[in-house]
Amino acid sequence: MIGRGAAIFGCDGLTLGTEERAFFRDADPFGFILFARNVDAPEQLRRLTAELREAVGRDAPILVDQEGGRVQRLRAPHWAEHLPALDMMTRARDPHRAMKLRFALIAAELRAVGIDANCAPVADVATDATHPFLRNRCYGFDPSTVTELARVAADAHLAQGVLPVIKHMPGHGRATADSHRDLPTVTADRATLEGDFAPFRALNHLPMAMTAHIVFSALDDRPATCSPVMIDLIRQDIGFDGLLMTDDIEMEALSGSVAERTRLSLAAGCDVVLHCNGAMPARRAVAEAAGEMGPDARRRAEAALALRTPARAIDVAALSAELSDLLDA
Image (cartoon, rainbow, N blue to C red; front, side, top):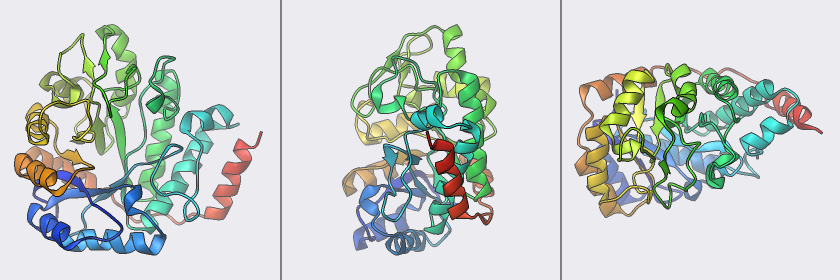
């Protein structure tokens, strides 16, 4: 059973308020996303994830950004801290094994508190010019390395019943601006961009993905999230037929009201809109503009949710010790 609404919403705090509960019941979004403002301790987080699902009366997916490093919403002392991905890959004696351990541990921690989707892996190919907001979150500087490590990360999630959300399609690595604040424009030609698209093409079987708020000027003058040309490239050329969500619709890379951004993204071919931050009026505007998921989006959503299998038992202490040993200089 999936929600009607073509949106994923954040919530305000550590517990679910009365107004939020009523809004979520009426909007019936596909799912929810959590941030540091929602996280205190394991028992509190288990209660919150249960409250969110109770509000919509079903086992709705609950997402988080738990890449490790700078982008990590669950932190010490209750959850393990991790190096930025690129730093870990540089330091690890066996990068593939380190990546598998990293995300097996992260996924197990998420599942234990009721979170069953993670906005990772990052399949963007880093360059020397990649903006600092993204650069050390990447896994490498060449498509082959990024593809291999992103595949390991995705498989580690799925083994624990956590849905990986690959990002940022069709590739954010050449952006020299932070899309949280500005609209990046990538001027590389199509032949050059093929290397950036390659990891996403190789991993097009994954169940969920997030778009990039970037203009690829050789292909279109609109941000990929709102561009029918770029979404068609994601669907047809890259071959991704999983559930495609926008990056946060409130980011400053996009222009217009949140309702206009929502309509443009869905009209371009995104399946659901991600609304992470914003007051209740903005949430209501997004919900109204998003409307209900279409038949293709529902099919993709059902296929993704079917992969939420029971987690495999792991020895957390042993895997943590092994990861530490791999990173020990």
